[in-house]
Amino acid sequence: MSTTPTEILETTLAALETTAATATAAATDATGATESALDIQSIKDMMDAFDPAALLPELSDVFGSLTTVCRFAVMIGPVILLILGLAYLFFSPKEANYYFGFRCYYGMGSVQAWRFTQRLAGLLYSVLGLALTLIMLLISGGFDKLEVTDMVWRAADCLIWQAVLVLAATVTIHVSAAMRYDRRGLRRKEKTDGPAPRKSGRRKK
Image (cartoon, rainbow, N blue to C red; front, side, top):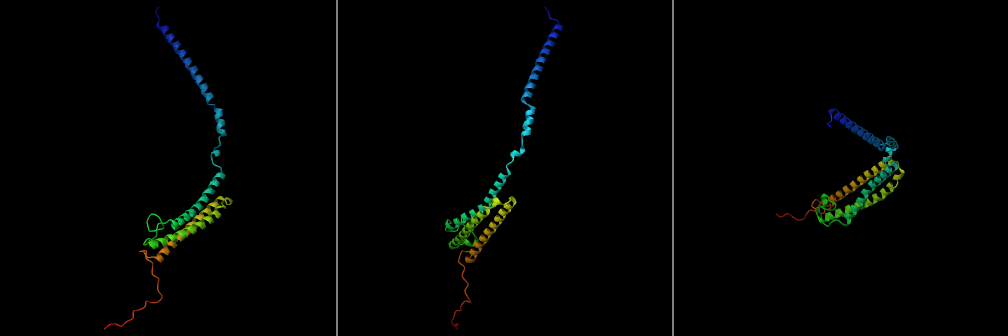
């Protein structure tokens, strides 16, 4: 029995309607699943409960860290100066070199000039470093009682005074070496009082 074109068309339309109904049902199920997975109300509740300020550190922690930084800043210089002075005083090489030791123009000409410069630099730097270390310990111990701005300015004042004192000590070493030795490392002769005596004797005719 042959099938007419009309029957074929009706069969095709029925199959298309069945396929479309199946696809619509699947899309509806997927949408329902997505809506259940993405609950808008829960997302809103989560966003309302989110506090950006909770990500920021506590002010007490920030100020505590700032106090530690200020203490470290005022203490590190004197400690390094003390270590450097002791190294110049006890561990400097016996002869002039360009690797380790306090180097200045008038302290490199001879062994005597070099050793004098190292002893002087070691003595000044170690004494100054020890004194500044004790003073900075006393000053930095009171940082907790100061306001943040006052503490920062106090630390800045300490650093400025440290730089001035180290510069003064360094200039003293250079001037002392220049007054004691010449550029060849020889000891400068002391000035004699009065004019030099003349040689006596008669001129030969």
